[in-house]
Image (cartoon, rainbow, N blue to C red; front, side, top):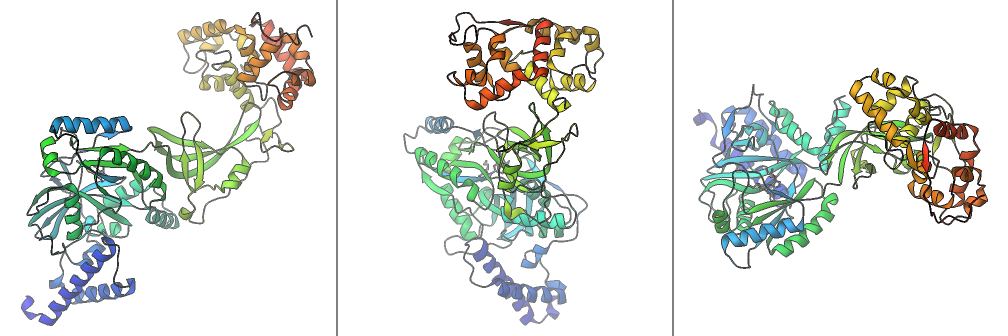
Length: 603
Ligand code: IVH
């Protein structure tokens, strides 16, 4: 067949392919292009035209193969010749030091074990097979033993070499299995999601999901349109490549045309590795792609061989994960919660995201000013942070990910729960529902009253409180002490046993210290600490309830805001009524004898 093609055309096609492969390599691997994008495109167009005119010349290694191929019915499975293991995870310096000690003991190699440190990319592991310098197959990691054949999809990734480079230093290995991580960078991710929104498709929650979804398309022309990238970090089985360290292996791969992460650092002592870990975790959020830790590998291949692997992971490598305190996700909506004192708090409803082993799906937005200041809109991609047990919060909006259809949030002018008017007091950032009977406020006050640190009523959970308020069984916390077993038994998810347990718990809570009692009342600005000071300063509730603002302000640790709030609380007839009902229904305040608050005694 090819006899009828003019050799000049065959030559031209080969020349174009060779140039395009080389320029691809300069661009993606060396990050040092020699020609403009326009020139590259012109050559590509010329090649596409020639291949269309002479279909006999079409080849899977041609740079034109990156546009994808007709869809598959399903993916075939292939066994990996050497299992693709995972890595042991570690979260502390001690773990890493122990890893190093384990290795030295195993090898009896004295003190000088050197390591290579690599960023741990958060994507998907793949294995590519090259025969005589041509990519023949590509597979996912799968279960580690076998994966899915995604050859045509992987060919569409621009930074994957379809043909290897013949370098002076490294002859092309006859057989090479090379492994790497496929991912989508931040820019690609935001472009992809903007496009999806344009087409009324739901955006991907994070770059990893986007990469996984893109790689596993049966129609590789779809994959071709996705901004997938790859970094290579290792090999499976190889013939004809002689290197004796991991670093040299990476250099050889780079010379052959594989993209290697430029942040990889060679031959480090374990202490240097720990320093680098800190540097990398600081750099983390300024990188153009997501990383979730550092991979530490014994550099000498002979040592790697001697150390071997367990069934799960190699003994010569370990992942030092970053403490995941921040993650990016999308704000699906903004809801407004009404708190104990009527404060309306906007809360972001997030696409669930893992942060440090916890799924986060909500984050507080504090108040309207905060939303304006951070310019958080519905649909925005945001950086969310979780610190210890604190409620997760939105750190900032990733503005580059905006598509323009995000919605600006407006605080409601009426309470979303009871419909009463909301006010914003002078000098305050918070908007509040003025209706003290607002069910949302009642529920929150009861939750606070029954919580640890207050009456600590076991079994008075959120769902139960919601039900009891919604059914009108509780209109204030004073009603708790008149609940009877029969009423409780009739509630959803309650039986005779659980009803009795709750009655017992309520009974047991009746006797309470003065400080806890005051805290339980939920007086604005009177948290546990302030309640404790007040209990120490007054020998009886009656005295406290009659104290004036100036009496209160005279107490060490009580400022004007707290003093005004306490005075206001006890001046309000409804509050006096509630407190007297509590006492009438059998709550017994235990006054600590010998309290230091002699100052206002008898007042
Ligand atoms: S080495 C047997 N190097 O992490 C050695 N893995 O938890 C395993 N990964 O499945 C691979 N960056 O998907 C290695 N520089 C890197 C990596 C890396 C990301 C992923 C890879 C692997 C997983 C192991």
